[in-house]
Image 1 (cartoon, rainbow, N blue to C red):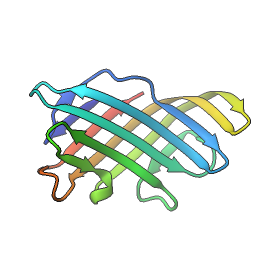
Image 2: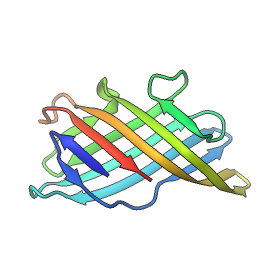
Image 3: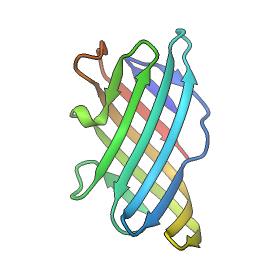
Image 4: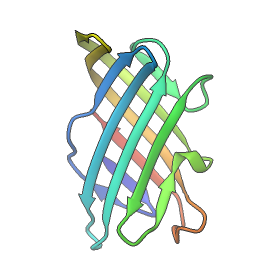
Length: 134
């Protein structure tokens, strides 16, 4: 995962997961990074779409898309795609479906690109650009 702009970091993160359940499909990733500048960040990525995952690009502007990307810093500042930002989630492969009573989990490869804007009142300023491959 690489970020630039108001937060500039590069990190190897844990695995992402995509699933399909009766309430909708989702892509989820959570990460905690200790920044080079001494600040710690907690990243939360939850993107919800309908229908099982497929090889395509899901955009925040597509009808029915929910969720987004947020980052919270240890100093209390926050950025989010939900503040007028955007994301593109691309699956290049989706495989190894494992079914459970409540839905399915898949292996997926692809990328996530997002633009996060500062959350008013949090002390954040500037824009954060995120690029992640999984």
